[in-house]
Image 1 (cartoon, rainbow, N blue to C red):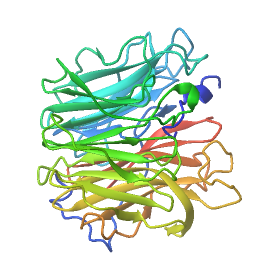
Image 2: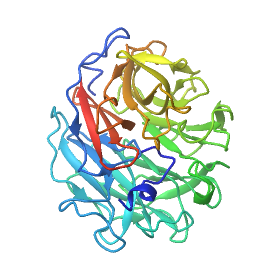
Image 3: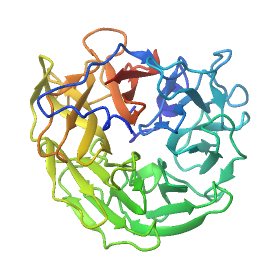
Length: 434
């Protein structure tokens, strides 16, 4: 499900890879088969897969939640956010029983997840109704923290005011600090919260502003921001306006001070599917933060290394692009992860050509969208031959998007949403490669 729409609107009624040696640009990883990374009827908005020193963690929402699978109502059962855990080096992942982290009496989705060391943080957004979702109703952001690799979770902390609204939050964790970012839907402020004591206390600040309505005007301002952190280097990216301009700010002091906003791409790209992503290195070899975003023609990446914001490199120079024998005429929703001295792993949703005027229209029954992955060993100057991880030509999962990336235990993990335009079935999937 693309981050630009609330799933409940449509569903409601029915390090180690570097040490193992990165793939040179001409080579590709070997991936195992698709396994579930969520319960039946699960989804997330991307960046919901993370790893601690010992655990691989997957966060997702479900409106037919376990253990019974009974579908949500306005009372009980309710839509909720869950985390499941595996040993970090298990391939395929050996998942434990999912743990509901959101309160059982509240409707919750928009899961976000980050982890580093033994510290993990999961977030979600609550809404007032499941069957009668209203975009002007309050939406509250919450966070829970684990200090034992996701085995147990501390009490939930309310991050935003009860009367307010937020869009889709995202979380990063690095060297004991937790960062959480979201848009204030009433003001357009890009809000960032930081905790240096495992979520016991938080400092909050505004790092930018936006006039974007990426979820539609009725939802209020929505800039779909993301945050990446590595060491003291932090980068925040977001939609700046309704034309789809993407802005970035950086900090070399763990969020104590920020650069002036830099426009990464102009206002002609359009809102919705071109939203940006940011993720920091966790292997301790560098403190690079990788950034990816859509452009008019393709997908670009940049590196914020504290000293500078490097110039753009093309992940997808232009559409169409042929991958694994399939021609794709568009794409969106990139995920990016740095590792090693200059390595990058990237994944994105790629839309097959056809009769659709917009091949990336996820509401169309004719849409066929796959997840594609590629790697670079030189900060994005060259990329390995892209690999298609899914096959949208085969039922039931015709749309595959919202990738999340983790590199841990010598294994690449790529999780993604799988669904149909009518949402008759949907589930988070994952492939592992090395």
